[in-house]
Structures are given as structure tokens and as C-alpha cells.
Length: 159
Ligand code: SME
Image 1 (cartoon, rainbow, N blue to C red):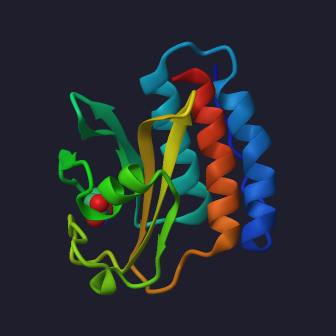
Image 2 (tube, rainbow, N blue to C red):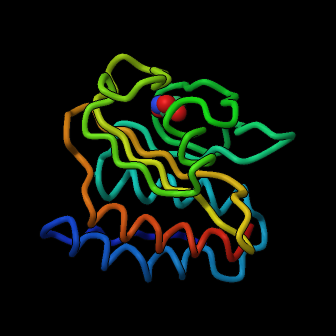
């Protein structure tokens, strides 16, 4: 079956509001987690044109690269390391306006300038993170945090 994504014109919030139910429909009834994560990454990339968007999943006490869209990236991140490992350790969303100001930031690409990492929580345990990178400074704010958290709640429902 063909899958279509309607990209709403308008501001960031309007785009997220239009995207969220479409993601729900896209993953509904499809039991394969990798297929769903891949489509969520693609839909975010298609809607916002992010430089890099993807998932790291907790495996053997590390974050291991999962489905993503964008340039090749580091495959393993340790607990407490980088923005991703810190979001995992602190169990909270991290918005980084300038990656050069984040001590320990892991630069998979020197083109990445700002970043947001949202933990994926299942029954109070972090099972992965959603990582989004931008090639411009200051790309992410509370609106991204709010809607990407909602997207991570959807993801937790099928992981
Ligand atoms: N910058 C991340 C590493 C992952 S890449 O950005 C895709 C970090 O510091 O954890």
C-alpha cells in the first residue's frame, strides 16, 4: 500500500500538529519496530528537512544506532556520554542551541550545529532516544521538545 505524508504549510507547531496523527496512522497495526522507526525518521526529515534525525536504542548498556535519515553516524554511545548519553543518564530532554558549548558533545558531523535529544521511556525505563540535529544554531525550542516527546510516547507504544 502506498503511504503518503501531507506536509502542512505554516509554522513549526502547525506542522507538528498535522504530523502527529499521520504518524499514528502510519505505525498503526504494523508490528515491526524497525519499519516503524524508519518511517518516523523519514516523516520527520520530510516535514522539517532536519540535517539528521534518528534513533539510538539501548542494547547491552549502550546506545546503539537505529533507523535514521541523514549522513552516516557513530554507532555506539556510552551511558552519560555526548548529548544522547547524557539525556539517557538524566532521563530528560536536552535542547542544545550550540553543540560547541556542550561539554562532551559527540560530533558525528562537523556540520551539526544544534541538537535536541528526547528519551524514549517505557514503564519508567529509557529504552532509547530520538536524536535530531540541525546544521544551523538555535534550531530547537520548547515546541520541538513538546511534540517530539509526544512522538516518543507513540514510539514507546510499539517498541
Ligand atoms: N551528537 C550526538 C551523537 C549522535 S549524532 O549527532 C547523530 C551526541 O553528542 O550524543
